[in-house]
Amino acid sequence: MIEAFILSSYGMEKPYQDGWTYTLTIPHRSDEELDTIFYDILREADVLADRHCRFIESDVTALDDSERYW
Image (cartoon, rainbow, N blue to C red; front, side, top):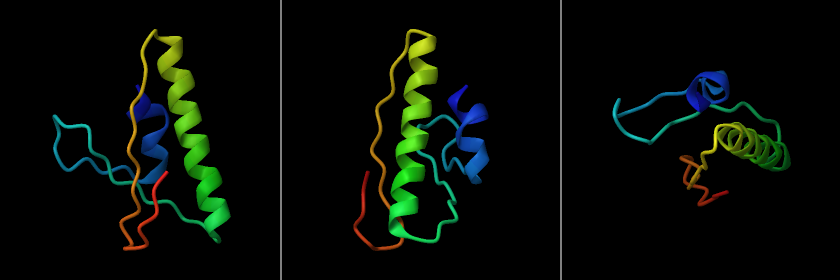
């Protein structure tokens, strides 16, 4: 459900079809905008999971060698 309603909007790629790893492509103009987008994604995923009595765990890392994480 999170894949279909949230992650698919960001060019979601799933390297292992039965896994929980995703690669997202997120266009942004600044680091602050990227921060906001990621926090929105995580908040939306949390709300959606909570509505179905579920929870999320996340470990988000930038793939551009910037050592950024959310």
